[in-house]
Amino acid sequence: MQYAKIDGLRSTAQPKLKAICEHCNSAVHAKCGSKVVWHWAHVSVENCDSWYEPETQWHRDWKNNFGQDRSEISIVKDGVRHIADVLTKDDLVIEFQNSNISAETIMARELFYDKMIWVINGIHFKENFTIWDKEFAENWQLKTEIKQNLNLLNSQPNARVLTVQGNQIKQEAIRQILNRFKFVHNKQYDIYTYDLKDLFNSHALEARIQANILELYKAQKVEQKFKSVIYTWTRARKSWEDAKKPVFIDFNEDYLIWIKTNIGGKSGEGTKVLKKDFLDKYNITR
Ligand SMILES: [Zn+2]
Image (cartoon, rainbow, N blue to C red):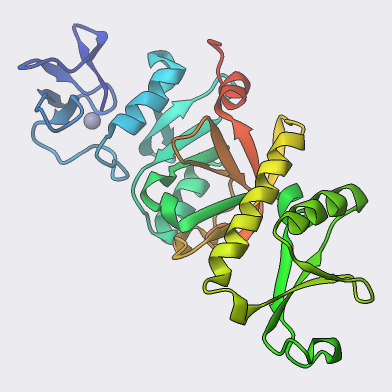
């Protein structure tokens, strides 16, 4: 815990201090080691909240955004007490989840708090999580495939075929890039081909083309407040599959990804929400 009471005042942990847990009134003492975030720990009982997870700097930074009056708030329901990480001015609970948790715990918390949202720390699986702007993914991708049985490719049995998708303007832009890479355009089928035999590394080539297209897209795109994205998540954390409350993932960028479909699955859609806008929406002090 970040806060405990000393002489009735909410205080933060400092070396050697003792205090009283404001949730259960038992004694707590300051834990101020060099490897832990300074916090209060119960002296005799384990922790008065069975859902407690060891606090990280990540939790601390988020809670500090909301200030001490909104952080670590006791919520009692049917004689059971849990400590919400943040309770907003609109009585919305925000739970900041750093470690992986079970589907049962997710469900139990959603039932208990009812009006709540999740922010999970995505830094642990950032390399498994890929995000594309939906607009880019749908209209700016090159489709590549090997079409071995196409008659026109008899002269090039190992040809790989590139198809340009998207509207006219995008098509034109992508064509210019392909021309730069000296692809052969087959007008009859409106496809581009290249022979795999001529290329020692076709994947690297495609990656270079795609990078060129991405650059072009970035130069032309209009910044939107809430941008739709699609994601793929390898080794997805399946326990989130049945989460009913909104889930935002924090990848330590200036935005959060609000998962809109298929949380806990391999791919789905989401929305990029700037952290600044997130805090403006939920924070009374800003
Ligand atoms: Zn306590």
